[in-house]
Amino acid sequence: MTLMAGASASKAAGRARLDSLTGLRFWAALAVVLYHLSRQAGQLPWISDLTWYGRSGVTFFFVLSGFVLAWTYDGKTVPAAVFLWRRFARIWPLLAVSTVVSVAVWRALGTDFSLRGALATLALVNAWVPESSYLVGGNPAAWSLSDEAWFYLLFPVLLALPLMRSSRGRVVVAVGVCAASLGAWAAGALITDPLLRVWALDYFPPTRTLQFVLGVAAGLAVKRGWRPAGGMPLAITAVLAWHLALIPWSRTVSDSLWYSPYSASQLLSAPIFALLVAAAAAADVEGRQTTLAGPVMVRLGQWSFAWYLFHEIVLRALVGLYGKPVGELETVGFWGATLVLSLMLAAIAYHCVEHPLERLLRRRGPGGAPRSLAAHAGPREPGENRPGEYNLSASPGQAIQKKSVQ
Image (cartoon, rainbow, N blue to C red; front, side, top):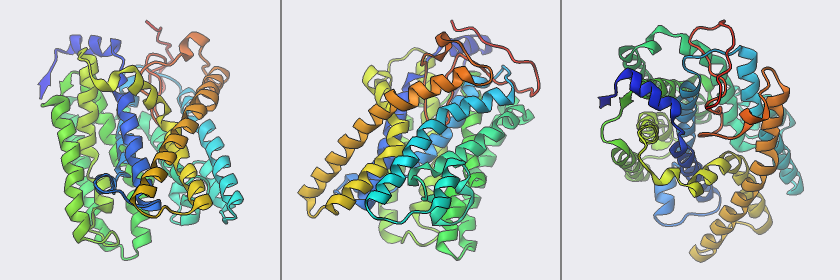
């Protein structure tokens, strides 16, 4: 690892657009989509093997959320009402629309759904209840936003922690989080009910908070000049090696057992994803070109939140209408149709719902910004703010300051 001089690192970071992180979001969302396709619509050789635990893409999003919020808000201040309103404007409109569409699909297919679960989803509290009717009652993919809402409440406190203000303290936090994640996974042996174990390790917001905290520590470290050794090549290799290692593991241990790779793939992957996010951000700060920051990848990354929320709905509708595909050729066609249709729907949702409603709510709510500040800039993901607008200080309660856009 290397350190840039503090002043130059801060100056470079302040000018950087982290477009590579936007591109990374597409790949994380794709892993989740392929995970659902493999488990709900039939498997394909090699692809399903590699993405059988692609739900770890949610872990990536939690790490990325902490990283980007720390990057954006470090060193500045904003009232809690403004911060939370902007988070609400970011995630809730599309959550509401996708939940309505999801319930409509269930009704059209003649499938029962939980009204309580749908309402809990809209209230961003469904992940707190260890019942499947709550976790999937509205939109099965939306449980992660319940965790994100919890992260937002904790974020100002995390920035205020003394440990986060020094490089040594951040190392302590990172090591502690990694140890706690390993401990949480091992503690699964104490939970005999498989469904309760899955909820406690994979949905429960306090468990997932470990990944968000690691992202916050990594974001602050990179903002202050830390650079991961090996850069992008090493980080990408580590991610691929981890998921390849899960393949023989999954063939020898049933997912119903606590020491299976199911929960491990999500709880233990956070350090690798933090390394990847830090390496991609460092490349952008230092002006090194990456394929992730290209215009196509950035556009796909912008659509990824909507893709994440809508892909399972499209998959469920196609399976309900046509049944599961039979044979490899039919499975390939089914996968292709699902990918194309869900990505098209995501593009429409982004341009017609997500982006315009977020801008509208941000202008109408507390601390509303003028139109010039509402223009998109920088990376976005479920739970991420736009860099260059408002920043949150490590000292809660200070007066709000608007940062002019350069």
